Image (cartoon, rainbow, N blue to C red):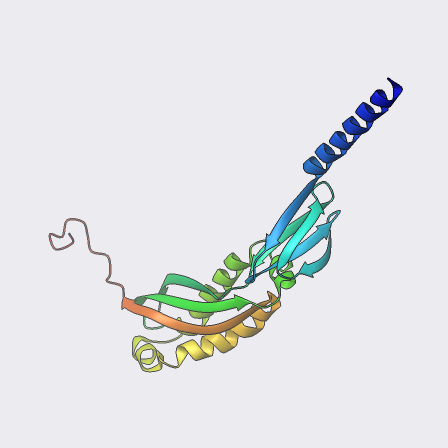
Amino acid sequence: MDTELVLFFLLGLAFGVVLALIFIASNQNIREYERGLLYKKGKLKRVLEPGMYWYNVRTTAIEVIDMRPQTHTAGQELTLADGKSFLISTVLHYRVTDPQKYWLAAANAYRQMDALLMSAVSQFVSPLDQETLMRERYALPAKLLEHLKPSAEAFGVALESLHLREMVPVRYAQPRHDPDYY
């Protein structure tokens, strides 16, 4: 009888250990195009390469960063130096090069890049008049890209290309009683 009791106790203990492992252990699969940031007790320990990682969910967290090339589009209406308004939309191609910087440099690096892009477009386009804008429209993306590269590198991002998708003159608002308005 004592042998059965010991055996039953050991079986219960093993079952308890397995249950405890199920509740505190987890795994994270990091794909070929991702990198992970391993946090232990709230402190960044290292960048994880692709693979399967087991960790204790109570003390460890893994943030996964997508390293594939990404596209960002932005559009804004700007008033030029001659008072004319244009809708300018851009397409920015970039990729994350440093997952640690990308995650830690801003609460939302994507929104930060959006703000930087829109600010740079405004800074470069607003001082121009319509004639100068049309003349420089093909050189403008390269100037913007060079201007944005240092800021992007601070976020762990490499800018690959920037295109002006469209530059559309904005028609002045007409009074609502005008029959041609609609």
